[in-house]
Image (tube, rainbow over all chains, first blue to last red; front, side, top):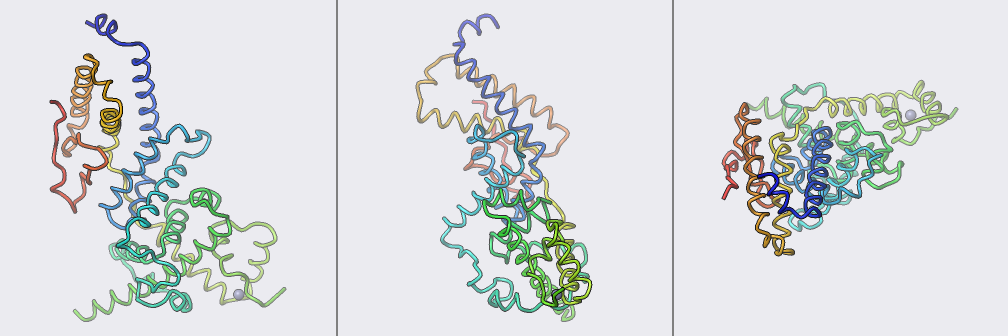
Length: 206
Length: 146
Ligand SMILES: [Zn+2]
């Protein structure tokens, strides 16, 4: 049976198939090792599971189809982060229904311009959050950031990447990374304050 | 020594361990007498902590297990449109079917402890979150054996 099958198989084609299987196996091994971080990045970037799921899948398909260009001496997670971020930004650009937040646009956090939000920096209401409140607050606060700030701060504080690694993922100079991370934190701090106020005043009303 | 504040983003860099040499020394010196910057650094640290401690999501494992199969399906659908001649080979279809069946069986055995249904349909267009509580109706099981 096996002998007959081998007779039928064109050796060249057989080689193609096994090479492909080897490539797939190699990709899956790397993915199993690094996938959690990348999926988490997708979730935090997209803001919900459904979008994260779509984003993650498209990233994997794209990554696999360009797997030859992956430099094996470089970290696989950074490579995937980069593809994911590009897929995300492309999608946002394509999607005309969504307006891309910029520093000029009013903040979705409180409807105030970013400059105004950045100005105030007192108090720290973060200690007032419980664990459950935190999950929701973090996601909401992140959603209010301009995409590039969001990416930078997620990669830095949630994924633990160095500025060097972030610069590579985001294709920008180190100084830009530093500034994006910093601005993101200032905006998040303000967002946490606003969300906390909303939450606690809502609680008092009930 | 200057009483002027340093560039604010240096505080974040210091916090992230990304500030070295004279810049670091200068900022630390400044922080030792400037309470405004020290307070600002503390509030940035808190934001960083909140993010660092925030819960993480793991990738859905059952999809990763089936990823090679999804790729094969994707590849075949591309070949089907661009290089239809490949499918004129009599051996290829039975071989693919046999491969798919054996994969499905071994995958099913492997996954039998899990409560998730086996998913075959994993092409880009047709997949939605199989384990998402937001989308419980989406996890329809499709069998790819003809
Ligand atoms: Zn100062």
